[in-house]
Length: 406
Image 1 (cartoon, rainbow, N blue to C red):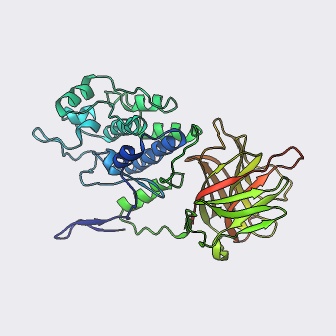
Image 2: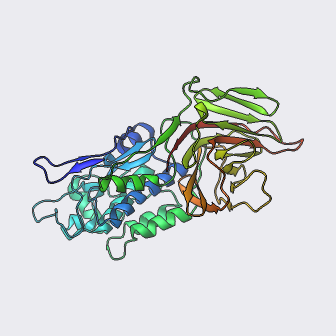
Image 3: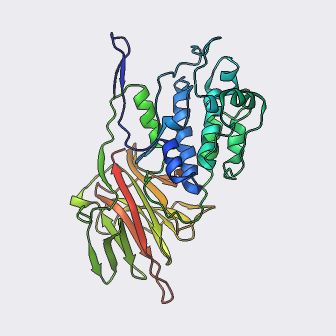
């Protein structure tokens, strides 16, 4: 947000992140699982990749240097970050945290971006298992980092190849941040059993990397937030309705939508907020029924852009509720509608139209451009129950919604 590296007292002003460190979170709530873990891995790797693209190496990636904020994990503490050709590791002084160091740090060899990738592998293994993969105790840890195999018992199977690739001893054989990020964003997020706990609510997607770059470049950062709600306060302004098409109401820290079979219901943001360019994220779960839920923007009476996923894992961007044209479609390989999932949709003006981009559980899956765009309008989230006499009512419980200008 601001900086001065040349004055008598150098300083860096960064965004305040309200949320626990990863170490504190795991100590109180246990390891991350499923989509939560996959999104964590994607967020943190996006942050590292953004730094590496600028020629910066963090050098001390560890659990206490990752904060779990409402907008996603943020990498902090750049106190020892340097360009790759600058040196902080000398013959008499090691810089870093032992359990999360790379072999080249331990052996006092030159440190490059590959060192951060090794630390990321240890960090993700720790997030998934609650254990540092090379143990504790400085002397023993250093030996295991240099010559021993990491303890990856209990590691998420979908992420295991990437973590192993990150923990190669030889930096030349190690996967790069670009390779890992590509793998993370090309594969759908894994899903596990229903989460009973609530408390860590983040917006899925990889926008935090861009915010991190802006901070590192000391650009003035303004999130342009339009609305954010966890629905703990029933007076926060969302409409409460009961009609022939369905029910919309607050309930036990959620906003609940119950569309009748054959109907859709739409919840616009409070205070009739309107926007042309908007980036929206909703975290919700579907408790039974057959239908879909998602987010929408540029809404008018019958026209809007919708980003939604059905109970069977079919994801769509709908460019118009009534246009007779193909909709961009993506079939999610892993999808459990009964757990908390995250859908993010972004409407952004580009040359020749409106770019529509969709993420599910932190992974970008669809993007298209509408060459005949709708004008600015309302935005919010929605739910639909399929028609038919044997269709069960869809119940969607929204845990978190936020929107900001992209």
